[in-house]
Length: 291
Image 1: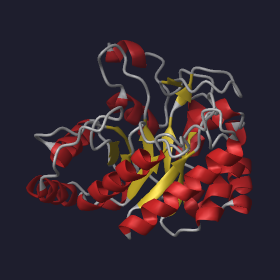
Image 2: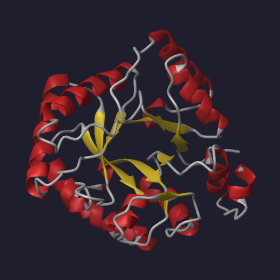
Image 3: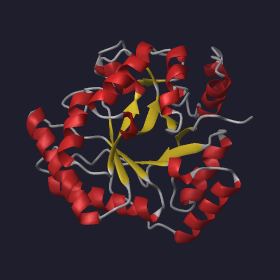
């Protein structure tokens, strides 16, 4: 089957197999793109990048018609540029992560903007802008950092496109873009049943060309709940038809779509969800098939 959309999922990245293992896992799901962390998202443990494995992976990508420019890396959660107590740590670790992504030959790094933990939105945004400027000044990188839209849980920054826009405007770097997350947008209060209207708002404020990745997730929550709990495609409050309309929206046809939906028991759902998406047909028995 020819897939006329860039669709993939989160995959693993291990010390012994690295990018080769990530690619093989993605291919096993029927994906034509993927996203990974270069190490555990909750800690600083990182293996050295093996250039031979990276070269092997890029040869495999070419043989399997995988566009390497559509592959995404996600920055670890422990980076929080808002937090003044951990500001230097977050900047330095993000700098090292950018260097790793560049060494892997990947173009995009998704970053949660951060949580202000009581400092207030204005101060939080100040710190994010300061941190991102430091990162770009320290790396002179070709990697583009994508700020992810957030659900607004706790003191998260990026709960609306106005906050994202303020960061983009103040940092003013060609290496800064946006990653949309459907669950986060829904949970933050955006009605995705009229996604074109949202894109029009986004285009006026920021510009659609800044969207370089979309995380495709259903939501366990009602709209505006600010909870950020992902659900499998078609089994949540966003719904299959709405998510399909986003995946296949012509304005984002060249943007990679990445699934971050929950495992069913111990099993990844991605092969089956990608099948549903490529067939544009919801399978209510999906969960039973995965079990």
